[in-house]
Amino acid sequence: MKKSKVLKIFAGIPIGILVFFILNCIIFAIFDNTAIQIILFISSFFISYKLSKKITNKLFKAETTNISSTSTIDAVDKKDTIKKENKELGSNELADELNKYINTGKESKKLKEHKKAMKEIESNAKKEKAIFQQYFAMYEEARKLEKQSKPDEALKIYLNILDKYTPDGSAYYERPRIILERQGRYDEAINICQCAIDAINNGNLNGEVDEFEHSINRLLKKKSKPKDTSDSKKSNVKPKSNDSNLPDLKNIPALHQDSKLDILNTKWYIMISFGKSTSKSYEKAVYLAKNSPKYDELIDDKGNVTHTATYTDSKEDFLDFIILYDLVSNWKSTFFIINGEIIDKKTVGKIKYCYGDKCRSVKSDFCYGASYMTANPFGCHRLQISQFNNPWWEHYVLEGNHYRLDRDRLIERIKLAEETFRYCPSFDTENIMNVAMSFPLILKKKEYEEIVSKETNVYL
Image 1 (cartoon, rainbow, N blue to C red):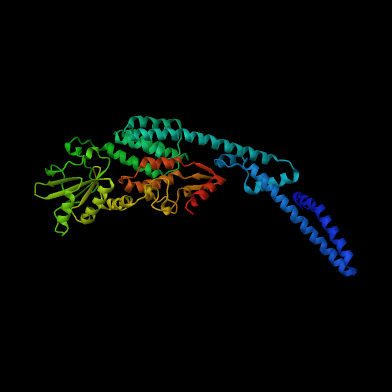
Image 2: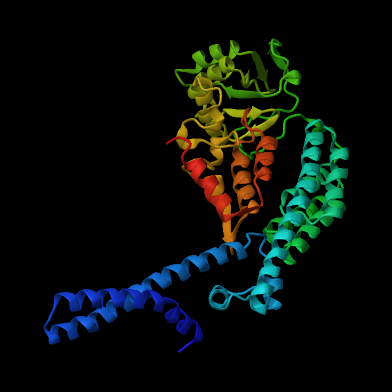
């Protein structure tokens, strides 16, 4: 029999003896029959034994729980390093060591080393959090500079982050890569991608190598492509589609232009263009286009006419746009331009549906949740990271005794929605990324449970 079990039995003996003595006093006082007395005597022995054992187990369990709670510290998971040194104990081994501590009152060497290792983990977690706050503050400053059209100053900060820290998040590599690519500095952009790949391979960055390899291949193609200095590249319109139905926009003289709307000073605008149609709605569509904030009528050298109506993101303008959209969107000659870029009809349809709902809504915070079902902290429920649809706290992964944010998976989901909804006038990429980066990287179990409880009960 193990020493711990013997100690447990003896710990319950005083209680057992007391119960056994009381029961037998009662038995011999009531019954005179010897046979009955013997039977009840044996029964009282087992009753007192069972009772004393049950009481002892409860006391033992309470003490074990108390010691465990004071000995276990939630922190960053550094299991690989510590387990190699055999300092952090497994759950079964820890239970055995705590059992010994209860029975002997002395901490074993293993238990002391375990507590020391857990304190080291907590210390590392605090350091990592402090470092994260430092480089995230720098990242936010760089994003503000980008918004202020100061890419060179922003780039300097981004490169400083990569030089001094090992940031956990692909955005820290993507932003400088984007700036360098826009400036035609392809070699430097390729180096940034290679740094990201090395970080992933070394386990310092959670991300997909394929994503950065794809960027490198694209940059190499751009680098090898000869520069085109012809004037044809200087158009403000950036075709995004190979649709053969789109008219040739080069050298088309304008027969009528209404300059009520100054596009150059408009933050967001959408142009809807369509040609001559046999539809019964054609005359109505032309009438609506001519009454838009800005109307242009273009005729090519073959005499084909193209009507273009331009609208802003104001409530009145966009609802007028929807009326014209519903008339002409299915015509073969129709195409759309948002802020100088030709956009496919499917994307425009999604924006028309969502932003149109916002224009009709009386909710000032519509984008933060059209209803309690789509409540979200990002300001866009089309990310599908909302209260009842893949909420943000479900992007935390349980690792040991804490939760770690899988930020790359979160950002990947944001980027997926961004491909379509970045053309929406209310889509604020900077705000969304700032919110995503503001979530704690590490949460203790209790902290995580409190967040989940709070968030899931907000609308109940």
